[in-house]
Image 1 (tube, rainbow, N blue to C red):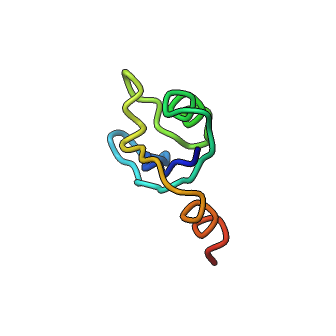
Image 2 (cartoon, rainbow, N blue to C red):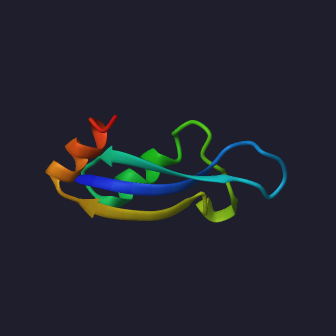
Length: 69
């Protein structure tokens, strides 16, 4: 399965961040949630609130996003 994630990233100072969209492949939404916390620059907030949004997408949307230039 393929997923679109929106996460808070960056080390811009206290309380400041940038939202970034990433695309990920995983078995289920929970495994993707756990994997996303190992990505570089993701905010490590209390109760893992650095991940804002996860949405399951189709394979064609995933491939289109990966090869977008």
